[in-house]
Image 1: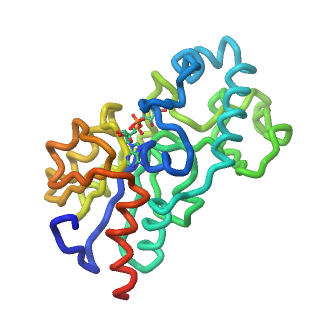
Image 2 (image 1 turned 90 degrees about the vertical axis):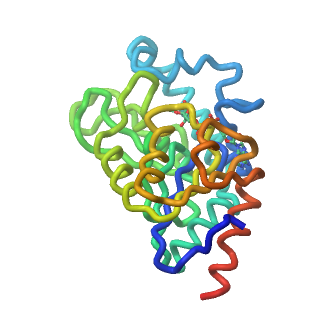
Length: 243
Ligand code: OAD
């Protein structure tokens, strides 16, 4: 199906974007039902917005958290987690902040853009405050336990840099990958969009899964057009049966 056999000792990496969660009901960013539609995200998901109106930004994240908490992992997330669980060397590098890879059971994950269920001090104190899908809005901690300043979502906002540790971890994994699946990303937001080329240049076989072609399609060895929740289980399920 992908034009290459998947071997038991392949190092398999999944580079995922919002499209992998679309079938869970989480809106994508650039689709028809884009998450930002009706909201000026560039006004809200920025350090400047948080500095000028933190209440508004925090309220928006409470709304987004509730929307995501009401969604569940779909067969695409589950197929990836099952493959790792079966002992394959699988790593996920995701742009998604929705926690669905973790909820489906994946363990080896780099979250390039953070996680909406993590908070950190807006003043820069170290440490992460973890909440969950079941944390009630009124129970979301507001203040940093160290300095008392407001906590903010542990998310990369517009105009902010990715965590260098995450970039290094992603680059290292992609340089040491045999098989790369690029799933549900428009491939236009950097630096994430450029990460697939690292694997390609290091010799990986690259499979793109998307409902349409993207700027990454030319680089991929094969592009499989269709919903990730249908395609990924078809690729991985036979490997699990063969165990
Ligand atoms: P986009 O919304 O830009 O792209 C989603 C991609 O998923 C598109 O290429 C769709 O064709 C594809 N897609 C939609 N449904 C699909 C399905 N069921 N199966 C497979 N593919 C499907 O989302 P990202 O590429 O993730 O950054 O966007 C990257 C970043 O842009 C986000 O992480 C976010 C945003 O700015 C930050 O918030 C920092």
